[in-house]
Image (cartoon, rainbow, N blue to C red; front, side):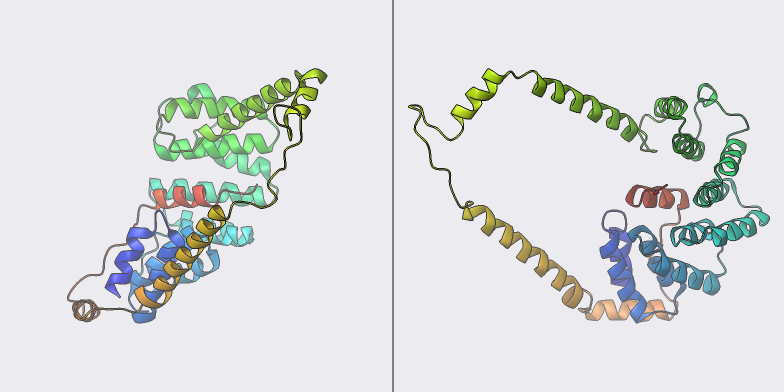
Length: 305
């Protein structure tokens, strides 16, 4: 159990699906240990299995009494198409006087749920209040990551409302205050650059005259004396063989995880697991930086609205 839990913690950032397999294996061996249920919930959330994430996080909260995942649970409800449930959970959490970090997460979920319900003005009011009331791009200054995430959500909302120019002003202000691009706003400027590149390509293509096209027709399929050249009728087999080998390797890796890695436990590991179950050794800690958790989930499963 301990080995699988440690593997889940090490893989959850880069390979959440594989981390989820290990966390489930740990749950199969020790389902009554709260941190195990927590690990499954976190891995499922990052892997996009929001139904399982909600079940496991609720189980963890009942077993441990820890209510710090309220915003994550509300976000799961929103992802499952139940924005009303998400709003109810947010309201309950706000009554409990959450700390600043959790408050940001709750405000983001609340605004997103209002958007899901088509209540864009209400969503805007939530984000504007969180940003200090009547916010402007020039007044953003040098905020912390929480404020940057709220500002990014506000810019996204403006774009959804059709206020593209104002949204781009906000993205520019956020980018200036976020040199490490923790918010991912640089993607909006990359889209503009891609459009410019496409336009340049169209202009180049349009600049070719008929003579150039004719010359190209002569060159394709002809050798130097103008006679036709037979084109190969089959693709090179080397590439196909390499692809087949890669697929075989991938299948072998999956088989190793499903059958070997998840069941092969050494004697020392068994002793360590028994010690854990008896409470002699605490299980490996689970990532509890919820702001980072939300950020990872947003990157891997961007909002559809």
